[in-house]
Image (tube, rainbow, N blue to C red; front, top):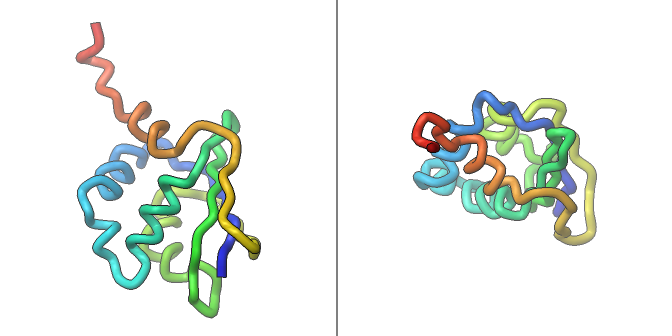
Length: 109
């Protein structure tokens, strides 16, 4: 099944989230790590701090394992609804937003 997902990014955990998405630790998670990473590349975040994306999941409870292992650590107010296909939402790419939040402002002239 494909699900439309939305949740509020926990900004104070952005550095940890980007690190885990980038270092392969989430991707190595079985059985859903690769899909979690792919869905974060599809995700967009609006000015309201709400990220939206689609994600494929075959759990009896939608995104149960994904929520427990990753999503609930980095998002609040998570909501899911069934979808018939993947889609791209408006807003800034989440991965770019995470990188922006992680800029070390002490090194900026």
